[in-house]
Length: 169
Image (cartoon, rainbow, N blue to C red):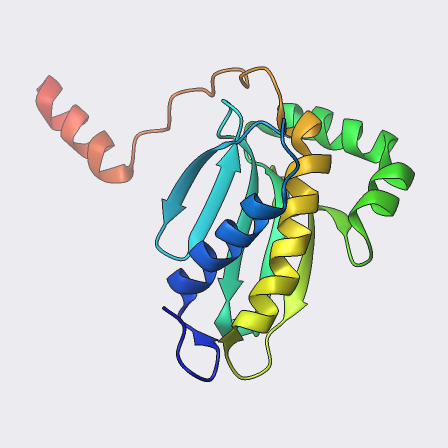
């Protein structure tokens, strides 16, 4: 429940924004699956590695909204390439401020940020909800992806390597 002055805590902001975005979606737009990780809300249509993410980042004074590709690098690059091939029409449909970037060595994202003044508010929630509703509608086809190829098993840590050496004796 928002405070009288319209201030919201981070989780309240997520759910407030999500509710407004869903209410703004036209009938027939398939609702995504969702994943909540404390102050991160992710939406996907069967492939969690390709998702739309909403995250207030108060330490950076922004709210980030974006389509994230978080699978193996080659898979992420292929999906980001599909987005890049449709950039002009996507930017026109999404509005200003969106950027496609190599976010980490392997992850890619098409995202935008909204500035946070002193705190999260219902007014900012309404603005972000409008962007989230557009993202859910416009970016869904780019989040529909085949499962990424399985990643190689993680390397053993130094501690596990030592245990294996001692276990062989």
